[in-house]
Amino acid sequence: MTASPHASSTPAHSTPQVWLPLLALVLLGCNLRSPLTAVQPVLGQIRESLDLGTVGAGLLTSIPVLSFGLLPPIVSPLIARLGIDRSIQSILLIVTFAVIFRPFAGVAGLFAGTLLIGLCLAVGNIVSLMLIARDFAGRTNLVTGLYTISLNLGAMLTLGLTAPMADRFGWRVALATWAGLALAAMALRWAASAGTPETGVSVNRELSHPSETMPSTPAPVLIMALAFSVHIFAYYSLTAWLPTYLAGAGGMSVTEAGIVASSFQILSLTGSLGVPLLARHVSLGKLLIAMGLIWTITPIWILLAPGQWLLWSPIGSIAHGGTFVLVFMMIMKFTRSVDENRRASTKVQSIGYCFAALGPILTGWLQGAGWWAAFGMIAAVTTLLVPLGLLLTRYENRL
Image (cartoon, rainbow, N blue to C red; front, side, top):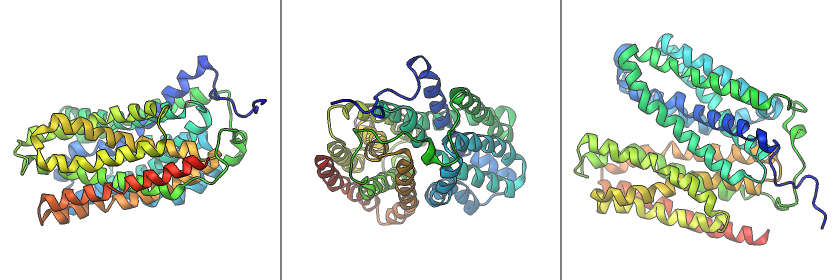
């Protein structure tokens, strides 16, 4: 059979040029979490300097999740009109301005800047997956894994370096410094897209036609949205309360609890890379079942043996990093065009992050009845990934 001219397995860029777009994507990913996580290490200094109360501090840290959940349906049509490259350059420019502006504009400026950043990052969450689908055809699994790693890398950079910079230069300068990361991403993205201008305002006009390998049936958006919701709900619930549990009922010091909780974040990189590699030989549905089983046993294992963190942390991290990238891989595989990718990603992320915002609140409420009630709820919710994996397997078998 003659291959379709649109079914090439090579990316849109030639091999000698592929590293520049890939590096630009990684740097973009670093910027999609770092402006928000930079606040956490200096939140105490911000509260003291601006006389910010507990409610205000909680709202400041809640804006990102609320933005990721509520704003995608609003910004998605804007992405369709601007196109991929213009959307990326626009959000990076605005993020640069907002990161510099918010530390020096008082309480109102702090919240306005954070909300503006949340808006831009909501755009980035959607458009980055569209970029992968457009520019890295045939390599989407591996590139999606690298992209998810870049999200964690940006967060780890700001979590690790903001506090030392604040000790030396003050929290305002420390926060504003991260504008340099956005500027670097903007420059690299401009270099990567130079010579390949967008062919029109509408996203539909910049897409290649669907290839022969793409499914002929609609994407299972509901399965993807539910899987992402369960995962993000469990992730935010567990990471929000894990240090508190370990430093209390877990019998660890505050420092030890922080180290263990950090290891759970860092080791998620194994899942982010491991799942794309496994996907070469195992169906996405079966991988989702496996991630669901690991997710389910992790909070129970933590309750039964918190001291065994050298075992449960790396194993649980596989599910944490793996499920995240797995859902994005579903979007790549089951959407037939980049515009369908945009619409599916909008629904999946909006539903998921809205559901996730309830996680830490519900976990904290149940914690009043004991840690078994709180973490048991997380385990119960994650069991839903198993039947979702079975449904996804049936969908894959019909393709």
